[in-house]
Image (cartoon, rainbow, N blue to C red; front, side):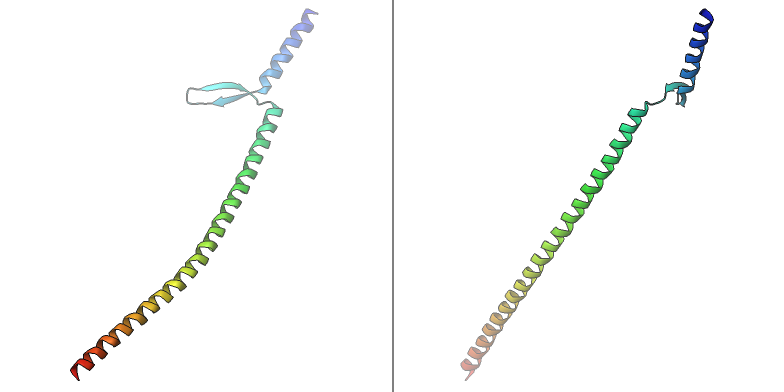
Length: 110
């Protein structure tokens, strides 16, 4: 049984040696145990859900920006039309005053 125990301990050490992955760092090579399968799956799912969240967030941000651009364009269109009307009205009024001024000068000259 002591031989069986030794063999078992050797096989366990052999298993642990195979499940240990060497990792190279600046300080040297260290043995780091492999990540648990469940933990790895959890991290993978987490990563995928984060990607999905980022995709949805980016999509909604882009959609909001497009809606804002459309609102701004509509508002800018309205504003430019009203400004054109105001400018035209101002030009008409200034022309009217100029014409009256010149008429007064003409009448004064007569």
